[in-house]
Image (cartoon, rainbow, N blue to C red; front, top):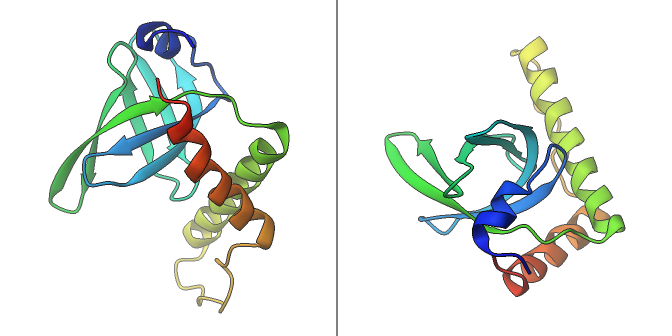
Amino acid sequence: MPDRATALKNIAVGDIFHASAANGASLLCLTMSVTRSIIQARNVTTQIIYDFDRRTGIADWYVFSSHYLCAVDSVAPLPADIREIMLQLDRKGRESEYSQAEDPERPWISGEGSLTAEEKRGLLFVSYFYPAFPV
């Protein structure tokens, strides 16, 4: 496994990595863009966008009036089937966000945000996988 600096430098658009927040939150991140100084990533489960410092792997996260630091803690590549499940979960989240933006008055449909059996399997897998491969 490469050292932390090399691992952060090697993150590319489309990569999925894991980060943790100081409040204990687990952040499953899909890389959206990479510059010399920033790794911009979207949380696949919440659609929150974070700007990680490419040198330190740290991002600021503001939740209501609280400020948290988030840190990249694993960049291990996921098995292909799990990666596809995570990408599907991300698409599902984006579609939900877009639907809400298009029609803010749209009523909530019971079960609409429920996880499928495959999504549950994928999230359970990553909850064990990433801690086993820290950076």
